[in-house]
Image (cartoon, rainbow, N blue to C red; front, side, top):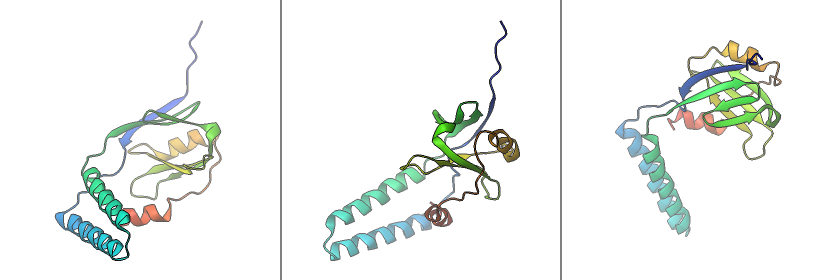
Amino acid sequence: MAKRETFRISWTAHEYEHKERTTDWFWAVGIVAVAGAVAAIIFGNIIFAILLLLCVFSLTLFINRPPETVEAAVTEAGIERGHVLYLYSTLHSFWVDELHPHKKIILKSKKIFMPLIVVPLGTMDGERVRDALIGRLPEEHLSLPFLEIILEYFGF
């Protein structure tokens, strides 16, 4: 009995694009965070001030971490990113964003709390991935949320 071939296009990419940050960047983020905490204390919201400082502290710890390499794939069942499989039945549409400096697939999910899923393409050919997805999901022009674009601009 012949073994059935399964469809799979796989590649590896960094989970996010690492940016080198100077000490000036950390000073600027720290000054803005302390100013926000002082303003929160002046307005009588000490808990928000503590939360703001804790968030900035954890952000500075996380931001220095080099990105891990994740494996992504387009399969018969869905799209894999790392160890997570996004089934086609849980996805609404897709868009291959090759105009962005770091190519990626943007998936629109049917789930309420995870509306957009971004899968980095790395060095994979976007047209090849698009051709593989076109028969499985509808193509819809999607873009990153405005907040993510702003955060990326400021180096987060």
